[in-house]
Amino acid sequence: SREASPQPAEGNEGTDNVETPEGRRCAPNEVGTISSAQERNQPVIVSANTIADKVIEVCDALSSEALGLKEAATLLSAVFTPDLLRHPGCEEKEGTERLWDSARILWNFCVAHTNNLLTGVTEQSLEPHGLTKSLEQQREAAKQVTLLRSIAADLLEYCLSDHITISDAQIALSFTSKVACLYHEEGDFEKAAIMFARASKYCDIVRQHISLTNNNENHGEASANTQLLLSQLFVLLATKASNAWHLSDIDRCHLLLDDAYAVATHREQNEASQADAIKKLVLVQLFLGKSTLEVAVSNNPNQAVRFLEGAFEI
Image 1 (cartoon, rainbow, N blue to C red):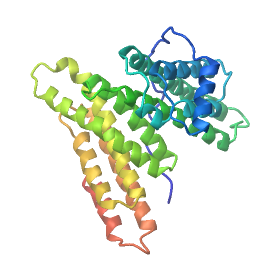
Image 2 (cartoon, rainbow, N blue to C red):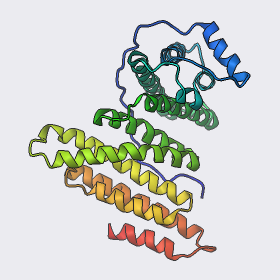
Image 3 (tube, one colour):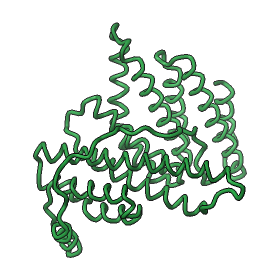
Image 4 (cartoon, rainbow, N blue to C red):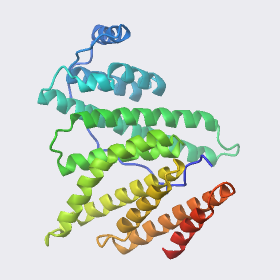
């Protein structure tokens, strides 16, 4: 089976309500110069402010429906590339901050667009004739949104300094882990693995923070945030385990499932959250066990037994 394992529906996502910073928009001739230089394979020198301007311009066009998802992704992919971000023309704090804000604005658009898609699907399913849009169109739109999210994650990571604060790590973890899970759900397991690897760095920072918070006697105020972080870590580890299974990395899959169980049963988890996480983990184990049985004709059926016994033990 090449389908991703079923993940719990997260419902509508919230936005960070980041306001669009005032500033100049990227001049058309400036963008044209960048594109022309890229076509000639020449090095491009561009400031963080220029990239931020273009991102905000594209977000404005998306919000007004003057630009489609695919066109927006193409434009942003052309203006900033990994090479471009590795060799910025501007390292000023102001430019980096604007780029950070523009990444979050783009992310918030993706969240709002996804919520609108979900609402539209729900409303259409209640109509007498069912869904009016084809599933293929919906899948294509979802893939374009995932691409835009990955661009936002790239921009955000570029803005991080060598000394990452816990608040920045939480945002970076949210972006990278969400993109990884979306790639997994779309069945693009190789891309998902790359994003999961990027998320691991922030995962380690967050887990260390939780550990330090738990050792502090006055951590009552941090309890709600800890619950949110543990939930995020659990989804990341459980989905990452499933992704490892799809890539035939079975030993790593089991290690990640054990890690997910440790997070699910963390002492800071409240009773309801713990029960919910354990139930989800059992379902993941069962899915992987049954899926392994389907291909057990040419493989060792003991692998399937291992997954199913793990679910039974939980």
